[in-house]
Image (tube, rainbow, N blue to C red; front, side, top):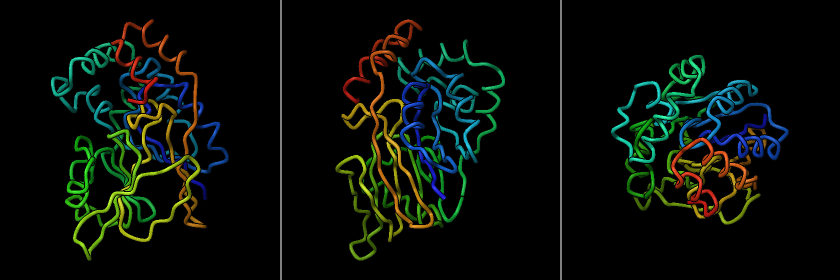
Length: 243
């Protein structure tokens, strides 16, 4: 079975559609949260995600904020502005779908969270120390996370007593997972690794192969939609530089 793993769509429908077309064929989808926030198409993204095959999705911090689980004052000014706009345009049924999302899932010996297994909605795993501390917080072999918008793998090294970070070198890179690991597929709708292309991972549970992928999309169109919606200019400008 081929599983599409994606995260941090951030209401960027054009990028999401690009990923779905590029990833075909796939049998099921695991989404690591932040379906909304920042981008111009929140309702369309929620509706697209919830209708994907065998969808399993966890709640991200922006998803949590728009349903009142997180105080929006915890966000920076631009994120708060985006959330205020989102509260006006998000349909009640789509808000309810986000509200009902779990913070954490365990599927096929794989844990799904948005932030970290220790703090599923909010904590960032950006460095080896934080990754090491979180290895004891999940019982499965693999934990999938998002939130940082930076694709990478942290592998447990019991000999050295740390978590080694492995960055992806190129799109199409095939890798396997032999050690306990934390895997981040990067962001669909707002990459922050200085690569503007949408990021995702495909996992084949028969061959146990993982494939890291990137796909381009019409960034100028999304920038125009963001500005026309009256959202902060930075949400548009950072898309071009992948930051």
